[in-house]
Length: 197
Ligand SMILES: Nc1nc2c(c(=O)[nH]1)N[C@H]1C(S)=C(S)[C@@H](COP(=O)(O)O)O[C@H]1N2
Ligand SMILES: [Mo]
Image 1: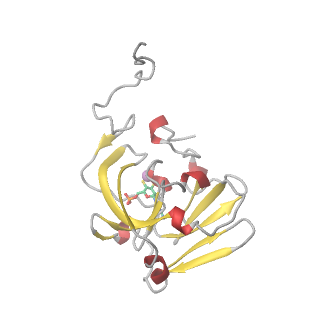
Image 2: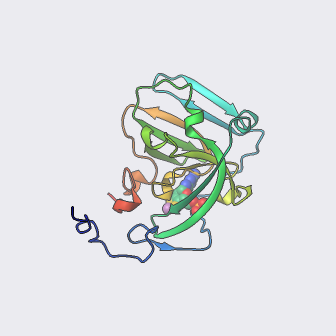
Image 3: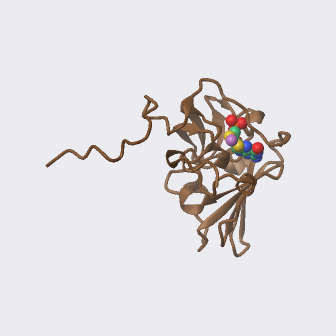
């Protein structure tokens, strides 16, 4: 038996195997927002999931906080080429939020307060791949970074992690969101450098 080694190492090595191609590590946490940051008081905050049939589930902040909370340690990758390694978050798994949702849709649109949207296939939100996160590095998520809570889908470029998340809409088709309508890739896998379409 030979060792399978060649063939998958054609890409330029960055030196750090945790860094996807074309990315560099940053220690700080840049803020990237199109437009002003909305201000959502916790008493007004809610999170919804609406199915293609129009069935709607809604959580208040208290109901959301009563759900099982998990700690997430993950790397994040922004399409503008910075990556931040080993970030820690706390929040609720989308698996928990989708527990009672019945759907035959394969696609979703994440909706943010302020109007930002981004499309993510349903399977990329499930099986431990995505969270609604409200704590970063042991502190409540700063408003500039999406507080009170943001979507966290760290295996895709960070524009998919919608800040100030308000809810998830299940859609029949893959509908481009804000950046996807402006030339960003429909899927956004950093390991395949799916930056622009
Ligand atoms: N609601 C909303 N979410 C958003 C954005 C935005 O403009 N509005 N920008 C996206 C982009 S392009 C990136 S790179 C990340 C940046 O998150 P950060 O500001 O916490 O670094 O948020 C994403 N989520
Ligand atoms: Mo971005």
